[in-house]
Amino acid sequence: MSSHPQASASSWSRQEFAGLDFGDTRLNDRLVGIADAVAAQPMSPISTACGDWSAVKAAYRFFDNDKVSPEKVLGPHFQQTVERMRAHERVFAIQDTTYLDYTDHPATQGLGPIGKRSQKYRGFVKHTTFVISASGVPLGCLTDQVWVRDASEKGDYKTKPLEAKESYKWIEALLQTHTRTPEGVEVITICDREADVYEFFVEAKASPFVIRAAQNRRSEDIHGTLRDLVSHAPLAGELMLEVPARPEHPARQAHLQVRFAQTTLRLPHRCQQRPETKNLPPVSVSVVWVVEPNPPEDLTPLNWLLLTNVEVSNFSEALQRIQWYTQRWHIEVYFKVLKSGTKVEQARFQTKDRLLRYIALLSVIAWRLYWMTLLSRHLPEADCTQVVTENEWRALYAVTHKTRTFPKKIPTVAQVVLWIAKLGGFLGRKSDGPPGVTVLWRGWQRLTDISNTFALFDELGEKYTS
Image (cartoon, rainbow, N blue to C red):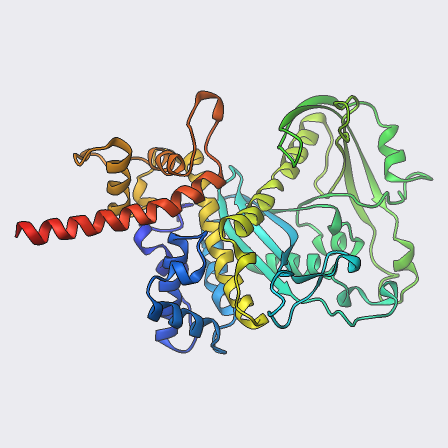
């Protein structure tokens, strides 16, 4: 089993949804057809992607069918992700949460509050575990939860058991990850600050993790906090880190200092006060402190306090744990593809259940779009039929090179991805670097129209020459 999601681009959806069972073969086939149509035009509304009116009506009936559930839509994709994981000794399971905002769709029923109460935004909360290979190839989603917050819920949040709080999502996803991990594959869980929950550390046990601390926890080894501990540790070394571009801030290089220490976390006060948690075992961690001593003017300095249950005993190991944590940006890009590349927040299905089914499908398509983006960087010489059909690459070649004379050798993934990106506005200058997801999904949208026209002219040419 390779990292390739399909044997050929024309069969990607049938393979990705193999094992799908709605209890009705017509529904199974309908999902595969809808997936192909939406993946071909990811930025278009479903009314455009599905083509004629009868196909559009059939798609709306599909998402209105009670036999269709998000769990059944995503189940085959989870299994395919597991199969892709088997080809790797080590993978990263990155957990994160995002909000899907449907505030501008007042007619949609069943939404809940998101963001701050004062903002009055409405939509869904989505928590995903996204798996990548050690080299950075997106392998797929391993867990996914989408839910509606209860607007009427009141009471003291602090007195609730952890299982009744949203923060339990981190532990629940971790348990699902443990259950689905193939034998012989090392899974390293990567989370941001919201996962800084003592019960999460306990549940992880021997399962490797790197989490950015949100709380300045107390240490059992000193009369102080974790920051007190590492601030007195010797400087282990320095490094330069590429910081991705943010809104209003360009990409930059940050000069960082690194310190590390080992400690045992003290049981939090809230756990000591509850019968069900007061006997939780101690948790030993390595603490890696990454700080930017001289940030550019008007910029907040990088300041990461990383917790890991994988021992750090030297600077080289500290650098590796930092590198593991930097893989977290993959899930941020994945969420960007889901929102901007598939326009999921513009979908108008009027009810919660229809939307949840559609979101499940787009979650798979967003992974595939991101996979195609990075495949050209990791497997540039692979056969291009891994990502496009024969008709698509021939149409792409004809438009790009302005010729109907095709090469004898099938183009590579890198060549085809570059041509698609140029359709999306990528200039391909030496200073531009590799194409990103935005130009690729724009280009993919144009390729669909081009390849359809190309196929039509071929069909008409055969008709009038026969």
